[in-house]
Length: 410
Image (cartoon, rainbow, N blue to C red; front, side):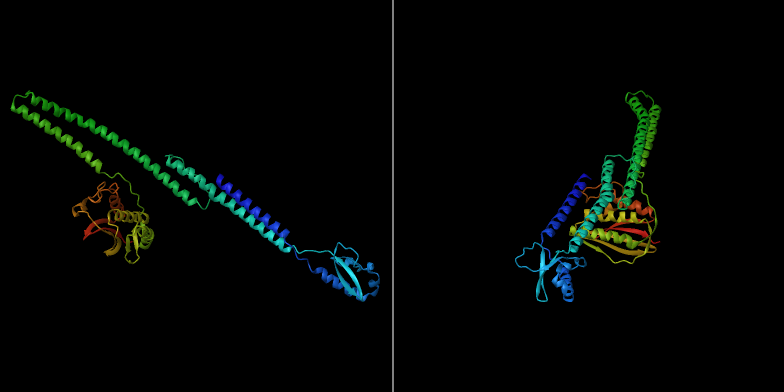
């Protein structure tokens, strides 16, 4: 804000300096006198022609009727006159008519009025920008720093500015989502730790029993065959118990660890595809990748527009990362009451045997070496499509990798 105030002060000083220079130039420029005195001089000459006595006694002339004329006298070439005058002849005699040289300052006044209006307007605009844009923006910069430091509990203060109202509302929603995610993550970590402690305690008991049975067998404590078989049965029983705990760990590890909020409704297909086309046309042109979007017939779909855009963005980013950079294509087809949207890329090096695992969480294919990722992209795609009552499947055709989204029509 301090830098903005300095810039405003510099702009005001520059404008005032320009106004001063223009006024100085106007004052120093030679100005043409007003010709009104000539008109009055002609009127006076006509009056003197009509009244001969005025020619004999010019001091009797009433000059109050004339705004610019100051004195009338018989012309004497030797007389020194410091006033502006002109010489007129009346009945063969020369008269000196002195006048006030009035100058026309209307243009000068108009220029100053215009500059004053411009100055006030510029100052008003700068003050308005400072109050409605710069000040709220400075508050937002402090707020984003606070969020980056992990201060998620303080709500974002509402701002009346129509420029940033929606943005602040979105940031506050982001803060709430981050805070909820943080709370859920802490709760998940707590449950995970509790589960591990519980299972480790539960597994220790059958392990101790197995250890005792095994030690007894080693030392020959059991003499009869019947006792040995009973010990072996005890070991198998404890092994089954441990297996139960291992299955529980596996089941918990397979449970969904991400939440997917989907608000399904009706949406036009063009809304989604226009958004994808506008963004990736520019991005892929910079990457020198050919981008083709086939023609399609617009229709009403059932789903969450934002989530469907997110799904397509995931597929496009995968095509950019794992393709050969030559071509990415979006094609369309129909099947019963569903619309099929296929994203394909050239240069597929994936093995067909891997297709069945592609939509598993944290699974990464053989073509991901040297490419950063966490193996969640296609997992998220699958989960979101299922929650929109749709589906997603992958296939390899020649050297092209294809993922098709099944979207239900409304």
